[in-house]
Amino acid sequence: MNKIHIVLIMASFWTLFSCNNKQQNKNFKLQSKQDAIHKIVTQNIYGEKTKFNYSDFNDLKNNKYYDRFLAGELTVTTGKIVCTDPMYMELGFPQNWIIDKGKYPVYLYFGLEEDYKGRIAYSEMVIKDEIPAYWEFSLIKENLLADEFERKMNGYYPVENGLSCFTDFETYKIYEQEVKDFYSKDKNANFYSDVLASKFSKNKHTSKSPLDEEEEWANFKPANSNGNIIMFSSGSGDGLYARYVGYDKNGNVLKFITDFIKLDETEMR
Image 1 (cartoon, rainbow, N blue to C red):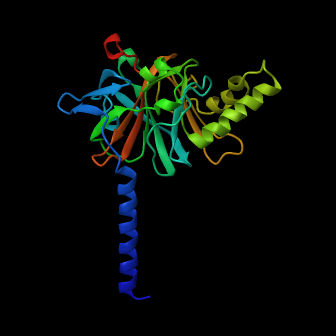
Image 2: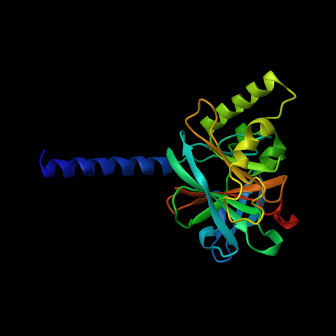
Image 3: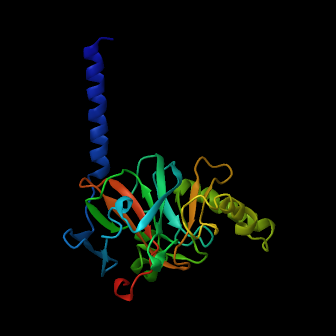
């Protein structure tokens, strides 16, 4: 095969890749209004307008108020991402966007200021290490949600055990069945104490957090799964927390963030 043939094949490959990429993003349309000067997003969710300010997490890697810690790489097998409390497991549905299969780093950001010192303020899954052109609440498709309340609160999720996680939807379904099977054998058992606690304990003193004597994070692989679940504590404990997705100008997902800083009443809808 001569060089001309190789060049033609490579050109065809990149043309096909480019077309596929355009095909994936052709339906991309912002569901919000962006105020890039004040870094405020106004988004209409189930008929109600809500706002958030993204200035604090727009460029977390370079934010001097947080210490960045790599919790591990998430193996993504379908491109559909779940973020939920891994013990409470409410709203364990995929986000309404899809990424390529692969492995992506997950970072935890520990606060350095007194009000939040040592606690996880944000978790961040990095698909591509760029500052997003647009931010929005990361939503679940409305037809998957049970009632009007869940649809109105789309973009938030409940934490009842002080834990959250990132995982692929395929892995999550395997994990969900593993938990069900565990309790079917003994309804008085405790999956966290009997299974997860040892995984968290392995990671004590691995971050720079002054609270690292606590069990802050774990990289858990369900049995019979090709993927993993990166679990981490929610910095303010139990509550209702926001999820955000950052896009580039072409609608490709760059960042997926969970915000564990307690919201003011003015920010809640």
